[in-house]
Image (cartoon, rainbow, N blue to C red; front, side, top):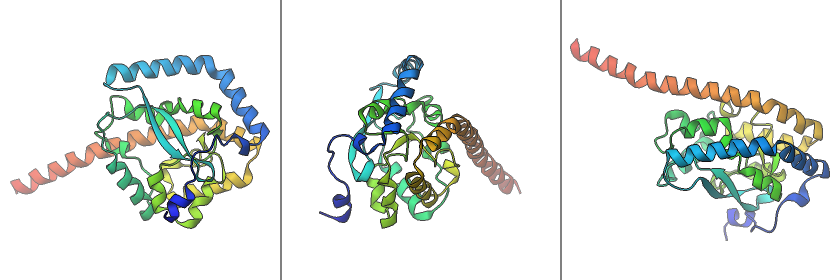
Length: 244
């Protein structure tokens, strides 16, 4: 057994025992209060996926959560069924090693995405099924994002402190710049959250989430516009050089 396998503990029930009582109450109260609207919105997203791409509506994936425990995470599917996973693995590990801003592959017109897949991801709508994980206690509404096990292969020892908090749908990193931050900055924000864990902090993060999502949507539009301009500019220069 290598060091990574030793850190990744087998799934053994949910992580709700590690959640403060107020956090568990907040999760249940918020989900139950919003459930009518969330169910309608989730049904609409599911219909879009079903009509736009062959394959299942939901996507299940093992993720690493509290104290390195693995659990099955639920999402709406935003990629083609035959999408290559190796490109994401390489991209993620390169972001960790290079310490460049954490721009997602779909910001560069990722061909693996289904119609409207990028919009679902940048808006966070693809993560609505993770409310199942919240109700089960695998996740909370607020906390670090759960990572895929192969991401841990590039972790330094201190990075593992981000697992000291139960993972969430939104968190301190998501409302603090997200795609403009490096991996180390993300981890420091996750660690800071676990150390500052309070009801007031969770409420502030939840209130900042919608504006943060809007900011991410604007960033995505800018990134895609720049990606579209670059090939055209390059092509124009080539023709000009040839004509000279």
